[in-house]
Length: 319
Image 1 (tube, rainbow, N blue to C red):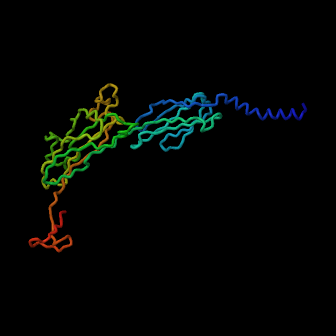
Image 2 (tube, rainbow, N blue to C red; image 1 turned 135 degrees about the vertical axis):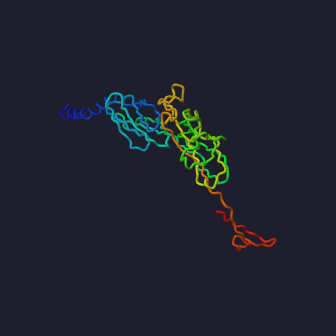
Image 3 (cartoon, one colour; image 1 turned 90 degrees about the horizontal axis):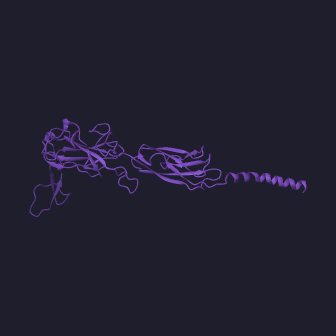
């Protein structure tokens, strides 16, 4: 074998050496995705979730690309140990979104990005309820009596939903006659009786709120408005609704089997502040009927004396 042929074979071996090293490094080239939650996969906002990647065949230097599903920029984590990386993210207190789809992709020297099946999982994030009552304002004409109820018209967070449902029962409480006592409508009754004092609680002060409440739509006790005097115009009667759900629970510890045992010992307000809203009854002036009469039509001349068979148009001028 001549010197030139030997030099050619030696050069060829040098060129193939890096390829041989790569093949040796990638003897088990395919990564298999895997992960575990280090926290719960669901919680109340703001909620911080922690996960650990457990890819089979992952090696130091493997990079992980995480899309948390809430619009924040993609995050990149680099593995430095033999097992994986711990990833963490805090989700905001959003009253609309009930959960997020998390996507994790990976790559290393043996597995270019796109060659490994990505991980897709869900993180469920709940918030407090958005509460309201119906009617928000009920106007009663001065000189007229009325009997009415308020309805819990709340939008419970993530309820009802086929998935990610925040379906745990709520605690609620009605309070009658809150607000400015000096401007309260006199003679008001609740459930047909005159309370010894306002505000009047249902349940009574120092007792537990109503539980379990399984859906919005709960109805207050009857609120009875008496016939009012002209001096009562502008006076109000306020009804307050209070709400606790699992993100601001009345009782932080339900594992004892007693949902009315706040850890704080505060039976009136519970372990966490409730969501609060109010409805109002307002006395307004009764309308004073007034009208004009016109001949024939709305465009007719004003007229107060008519003959038999004349067409009369009544023009409503009631304020």
